[in-house]
Image 1 (cartoon, helix red, strand yellow):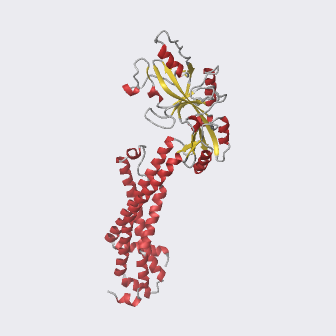
Image 2 (cartoon, helix red, strand yellow):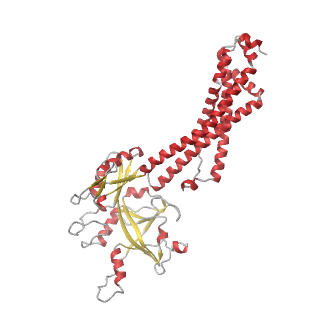
Image 3 (cartoon, one colour):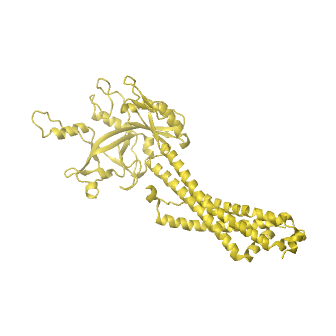
Length: 463
């Protein structure tokens, strides 16, 4: 018997018992929708966590810092604490070290990070605690810009974070965004900033200008004009890893610092030797190591950690989040699978009842010489059709439920990231239909075998 004939007979048998077929298909619909919605919640939570981690920084970036900048404690890659000793050579991050990092396998770029705390002014507004970051051209190219461009190599053009404006206050009243709720009238792209690099001299001049006559007054430090060439993407309430600082090219910043602190002056934040003299080279606060693939981040991180540097990447956080997400997804999928298992029992029951009702029909087919495999296939096709119809309808119901969940329960309420909580990718929808068909045919397999083994003469005599 041809497959189209078997399919036609199976569909006709299902149509003859509409109510029973509907109730059985309904069970598959509920089971399929349950498992798809549950799995979609796990997928949504996992993707929201990934988006949250990516917003804090790239998953292929390793942040490297030197314990010598802050003490004599070195943390190994395994997490242990090793004292470096006061007589040991400090392992500062210098241009030579940046070169060593660049030559490591799977590293595609390395950016030094030179951080300087400055005071910035424009008109009546100022910011006394502003972080100016000197980074490489590759680092600057990773910054998402709302407008403008990045500074060229050796230039001191500024790229301003999207939330920096909130830190400016009125120089006379001290009021700013956090006190008044209104943004300061600072036009970064339209007007230059007056930047004070020698903050120590600035505070000394403020403290001694009205002091007693026996103290020598300190002249206010020089202010330098710096142009803003780009703005980081996002509003004042949006957040990303570039929101809170101002960035410029590291070579341009180093040249600027040499100009400001010429004559052997110590640059704030830079270490000095035992005689209190500054080094002839710059020591960076940290470095950003860009790895070619996230699968190699842990490997590169271990190598750098074994070199005596402190390392951190978003992969540390991601691994723990993945474990929690996988557990949650397995639990949610298991809850949905219970409903589909109950539906499979319903399919098996329906097919067994169908065999009892059609015993005489099966006997006639055997007497007429119908192949045993065709009888088995007929019942398997019937159960498969029940699974297919229930699977397709279950997917439609799943999308409806998912839409309702996303409308009333946003991902921001649970993870802090805006986005859909329930997400049904196409592969999940297709896999659910295939799985429903498989469950249906598996549930109908034993009844189909029973139909094959019926005695023709006993089946014909059955009333």
